Image 1: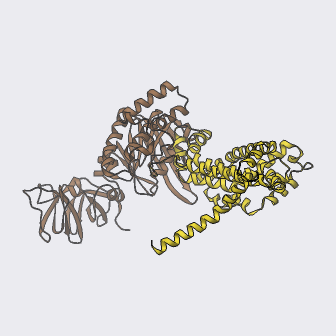
Image 2: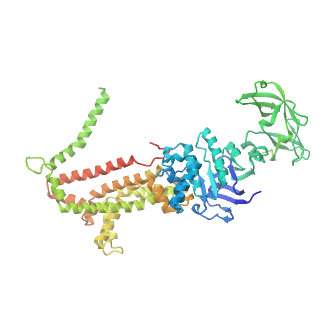
Length: 358
Length: 263
């Protein structure tokens, strides 16, 4: 565990009678890339804006590098920010945009020229310094916005859905570029997104938010493989969430549509109670599997060809379960209506917190 | 030729005649000062008249002052309303429209009651004070045009995000307004400025009742006492106004471009 650099301590934010952020507690290490992930209106952007200083928390405090910045203005926090709409100054060239923060800070013209040149090199737009924002593509504009934010050597970099206005191909290349630059500079970064793929592929840790609360904080693998709540399970990745009846929580045994299954480890809950369990499509396979595997008898409900994978939906009594199989020329996918046995590893069964009722 | 197209041409020709004939007639009349020949004698007399030079110079000075005061009041106000107080916008828009509803003569009588030499703020007690009062009066008269021009300019940029982007880069309010907001609404401000200029140059009521040596009262005075010079002055005033409009059109081509509005 590294040294904590940025702390959001028990922060809440209300607008009138509406509370949009509730008791958020997050500690971010120096150089860490943390994503705030959640649906629209979950409070992720408001939390980011509180870190930037554009909104003041109703309760709680924000500490950066040991200094309480809760009551500091945005221009006193030494934070860099990239906006969804780029927010480049239309009246300035690319070089002037990058130089803006340095000029405001009173840097010498030699230092500004050198830094602008360096930043243009980092974002690979050396030849574009004299152009105006409207002469650049969306992806280029966002790279300039990143360079402008980084030029002042901020202690924290905030990115507010920076790729959402771009097309898919540029988004993928830019997210790799942003991550590479962040790693190279070792800057502590908060990235707000509603795109789970972006968060999973870029982050050291992900903060999943819902209705103003933090649902789970963890590494992308933890968030994906061990979701702590039904919301996280359903929001991140394609999960099948099913109600199962507890047989023995201490032994990790349950029944799904009357068929016995086991979880990889014990959980809590009274026998006979219904809980939600989650399974990833890629964790389930057709066949009997190994000796330790959970097996369910099912009937094929639908088969969807998605290119490299084939998504098969099977029905076990009242429940539909999705499973993914690789599209291989040697293995034909099952036919709709065919009776099959599906198997999965007990460790891949995630028992979700909270009762299934309600 | 199609029937619809013929009617369009007829209406166009009638409209043009309605607009241009009086103008041509005035130009023609202004050039007949010398008996039996066309000449620019009336224009020579007008331009050679010391009072023309003095009143025109005075009106230009007041117009420039009006523009400066107007910009200093309107740009920060319109910016702040857009950024922080959008709910107040309809109220402010209504206030800025008042000079169109309240006649200038009412405003100036109000000024004379409020700021006469025996009042607590005796603007009319001195020439300089009256000049300032006239300037403030013109600022009020030009408010509907200046506010609308600036507000329209602000509408074309994302005021909040640009402000936040500048703030997070360390800029304070004066820097944000001077280096980020104003340059991006400069063309709109200039449009407002030229409209203000056109209004101030020919304004009569306020200048006359405040007894200032402005171009408007001079125009009226000449019109009442001479034959050809008023026609020449009308044409001069007309071309000044048209010149201002042409400058606005030219400047609007150089408006700052954004990615969403590249052309």
